[in-house]
Image 1 (cartoon, chains in turn orange, red):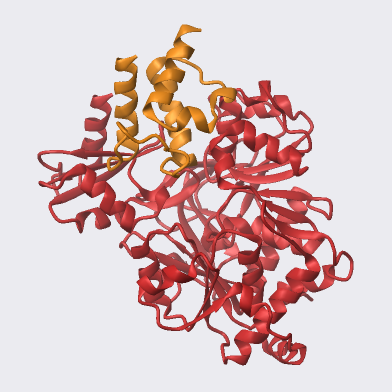
Image 2 (cartoon, one colour):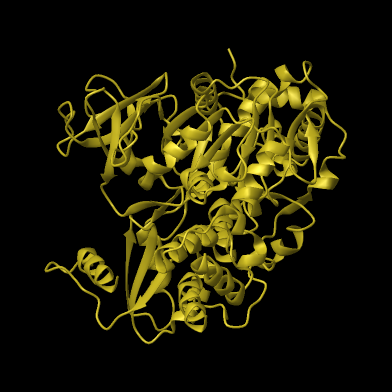
Length: 79
Length: 504
């Protein structure tokens, strides 16, 4: 789980070098991630973890923090 | 003969005064309201002595902002849309170029204006629309207006680091709207779901056909484009039947399996462009909307909106590219080779456009304009301008144009056209950056920036956010020891590409 989280932070950092992804928990609500980022993020996560992120998981709650993203990926890997 | 885009509104108004023309989640404006507001704005601006000059519309994306455009045209001026989300530095550069005497804003944008050093007059939308309409004054303005007068300026990326303002007139826009509408089959039952920002010519596709036919345009909330199920639900809730979107907005829906949960129910016309639509994703769309009309559009802003279209009606292999097709009626395409001769059939050549669609060129930049708006080299007998797009294409066996590549460092990224040079110049201005090189990873759609010097990556990224619009931000930043150069001293982008590929 920690490893997943670390990889995700790496991907996020590439999107925005200047954001503190370790601690930020309102990535969507505060409009830090926009639709550009979400599209990019989905394709990167899909490639990196070899999972398919179904549309019903692509909801604001799952994208608000590195933790939420890691949790979603971990669940998808278990399925 | 129609000579003014406002005639679309004036002819439609008596038919459907109470129908909604432009709407978002907060506001709905009927044709009667659009007309009333636009004439009030026109009356106010002209009473203040504005005429034949740029008027900036600095408002949040909203039905009101669209309405303001028409008001500016009523005053005999031309509108320049600036977006709230544009970085301050870019807005300053644009204001510097335009030297506008009037800016229309809303309560959100008004307080921001001061920071740009703007000293002209400011009009609040909610106030200016209360101005009594002076139809006699407006009629006088109209009498003097010609169809070669400009109606807007939109700013696009410039390789010298300064954005270029592309200026278009009534006649070009009317030509475009007539032919686009015929090609895509718009009518009074069309319900558009707008995706593109208002500060590009892309939104012409929705704005003017809405006026022409008495159709309706919904401005789809930006956040929907992050969450595909919400997006499709939005289309269904508003019975949207026509979309003209960038490819990434469409593939975002199909690639995430959204169709397993929700399907578009009312959509029957899907136009896309500016980017390659991966055939695999296209097939998913075709599968869920077997009866819909799918059209690939191609065109540079310099030729007003779109210039070519291709209705996707046959099957495509996954590796095949969807052609850009044929020019619209009354638009001419010539493919020129490097010697300015017409390329042999099937051979690649630069797409050059001729026709009424040609815009007036770059505002206040005659040299830049003359570089790409040139005499047609095939026409020796009389003056005839063509626009040289810099795009290379060839004809396939069916006689359709197929896009091949760019001849320079302009790229298409997420539907936006960007000069890599503009990113490099801005990055080079940051303290601690010694040299810069930018490449584009077409496969993954990533702008990759390399730099040398002691500057910190995070600080550089933050700086670029102040200078460049969102869509021009590098997706990867790499600090390197030395910048590779070719033997004749030019930046070696191939070496950078190799470096980047090794990473992966």
